[in-house]
Image (cartoon, rainbow, N blue to C red; front, side, top):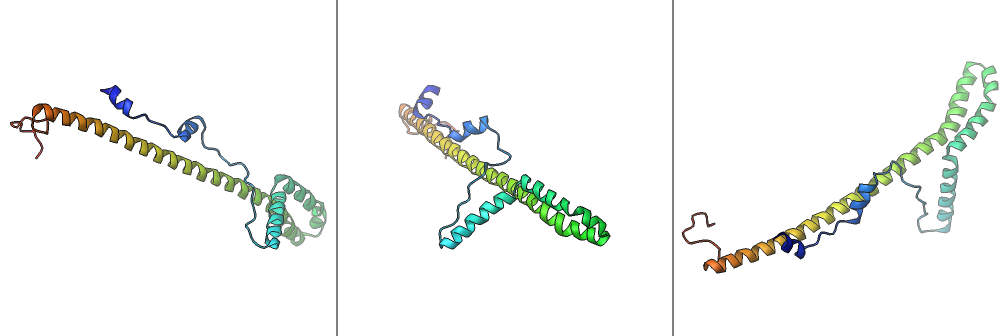
Amino acid sequence: MQHAISALFAHIPHPHIHHRRKNAPLAAAQVVRQQSPPGHWTSRVNNYLAVKITNAVGTMWCAYVFAAIALISLPDAIRGGAPTLVAWIAQTFLQLVLLSIIIVGQKVASEAGDQRAIDTYNDAEAVLHEAVQIQHHLAAQDAVLQRLVDKLGERRGNGFGYDDTDQDRPA
């Protein structure tokens, strides 16, 4: 009987199932090119420049350059006393250097979140596909079982496959 059911239904696993078994979720996605939304040409130019500048400033190399620039004025800040040194730390070093580092961190976190969203979508799609496959498999099994019940009922002559004296017959 096992061959009859498998001949009626062939399970087709979702391609993502094989991919997920081979590849674990990534910690961070590859950089996705940002495209400016359609609209006026000035907004496209502004968006283009904003993305280019953000990508340039949002690198650790830029943070190193900013740190070097900030350190050039450090000796003068030290000579100016505590208030000048505090102002240098707050206004020059923190704002200039941490700006790039914060952008880098946000890009990494965003890319990881994007990849997790893609993985979750693909997982959900694969699970849905598998559930549909199970439904088809169950329908094929139901059809075979119904044919068997019908044949058994025909042989016994009552249409149910039960003897009329059988106490276990459903009501």
